[in-house]
Structures are given as structure tokens and as C-alpha cells.
Length: 68
Image (tube, rainbow, N blue to C red; front, side, top):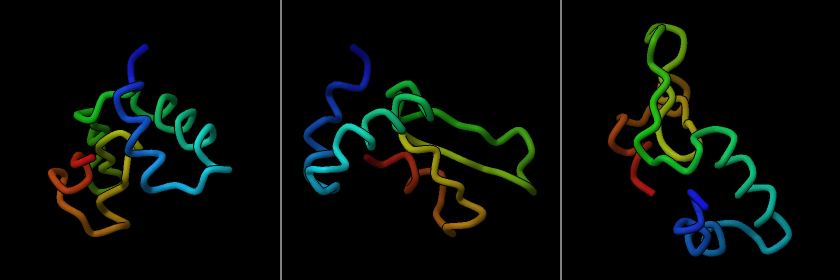
């Protein structure tokens, strides 16, 4: 299944009780694709990576948001 390779990262950065939720969010947001991008309306939303981090809000570069 796509995204299973990121389970070790989820286990590293999320508490045990959030593992399933984090995995499900990741799969809904990006389908397990670290290169997923939603930047069709850049002045409103520019979201990248596994969890679709909005770089307008979090002040990251797209490269930072894509880095698992």
C-alpha cells in the first residue's frame, strides 16, 4: 500500500495514540506522495508534502514541506 514506507516516520514524530490518525490524514492529504502539491492559487494556498503543509501559513519553502 502506498504510504506504508512512512510508518516509521509517523512512529518517530507522533505519539503512539496518534499513529493511526496521522497515517490516515497523510493518506487523505497526499496519498502517500511526498511530492504532492496544491499550489494552483498561490496567494491563498500553497500546500506541499505528505501532510500538505500550507507554506503561506507555516513559512516554509516547498522543499522543506516536502522533506519527510
